[in-house]
Amino acid sequence: MDYLGCDAYEKSINSLGSGVAFMAKFGDEDFIVAKDIPDFKGDAIGDGKIKAPLTHENASVMRKLFTHTAPSRVLGKDRSFGVGDRLGIATYGHIKLFEEYDAYPVFAQQSIRELTLTNRTYEDVLDAVTFAVFREGFKKEWGADGDHLKTAKDVEYALSLGYTMITLDCSEHIKPAPSTRAASLPSSYNAKYMGKKFDIGEGINLSFTEAELGDCIAIYGEAIDFASGMYKQFLGNGKYSADFEISIDETDSPTTPLQHYFVARELIDAGVSFATMAPRFCGEFQKGIDYKGDLAQFEKEIKIHAVIARHFKYKLSIHSGSDKFSTFPSIGKETKGIFHIKTAGTNWLEAMRTVAVVDPLLYREIHEYALSSAFEEAKKYYHVTTDLNKIPDIKTIADNELPLLFNNNDSRQLIHITYGLILSKKNPDGSFTFKDKLCKLWKTHSDLYTQALVRHIGKHLDLLGIKKI
Image (cartoon, rainbow, N blue to C red; front, side, top):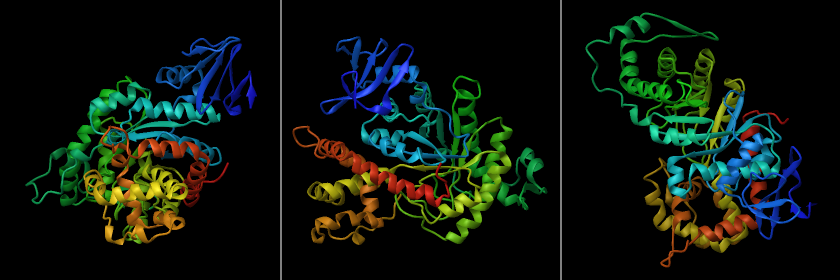
């Protein structure tokens, strides 16, 4: 719309005292236009207006002036949902979705691994969301997650920028189950756990054998100390204010309900306040595909995990939640609609499905690169059981059939885990082989990508039983 002589995004118009700020398009680029608000840094364009570029400095100003563009702590809400956007362009689609559903989004959600593979920073991730929220006029609370952080340096990096959630990855401090038993258990644990039944409500009682308690101590003792130390260093002393999530899911062995109870109780007894915990569930939550395993066993165990979380008054967090459609009805039911779900790679896959739809030749080139060399390198970062032999030969597929590759689990995982190599691959002259072409395509076809995200992530929300507002 025409507003103050600019091609403005109508939903972005915000008053501040006697001034006004909004987003407007100049050629192919978006800028902030501010009238009688001198805080933004840019060029004067007449009549008291400033045309300000979408820089980190201006994003920081925006978050201070317009609080809806700054993240909030949302894990205290009944339903929260992380939508990791590796590209910085998906928030527009996510906004359309979460405007309609009774759940609170965590729009900014990235791990250090993802930042490294995409050559991004936490500043960039947060700024991209801030500008999208401003442009689309999204006024609902939303969160920012420093995801799967393992070091004090990385935790402080995210918190110092205003991230409102820290997911502490304890995986490097979780030990394998011991092959031999200790002669005796520490007396303090003996007194606390042995010979006792723990009524956690809803007709469920837990008790430990000496072997089970010994395993809990051996496997999780160091992780509990690590989480306690990180909490006290950054959150318990009031230095920062953010939600705290305990992640114990990045391991080979499932977290039994007894182990879950033990970790939660030990953390709480140590004075750690956390909003969510992510156990490692039975079966496999692999990237970008549905649950693999005994669904009946999962449904049996998720019920107990959910009761433990309710007993200690925190939420279950479901990691690698992308496309786990068969588990969603039981997750929604057993948690009584109180949960946190994380997705990430599935948003990238929808971006690549869009490429297959609008530029088959470009998609073919990327697919061949992923298959020929990138996949073996990418497997260093992700656990998948992809069988490349089950991926249809792309040379035999018609252009209009290419999007159907994203219905094939093995093809999905091929593209899912190679995102970093695809985006960073360069030509001999130093130019990007794919990235610039992809960014131009996604910008041109942003509406198509938005529609794909609304449809695909919407399926997640529907199966979880999240109602529309």
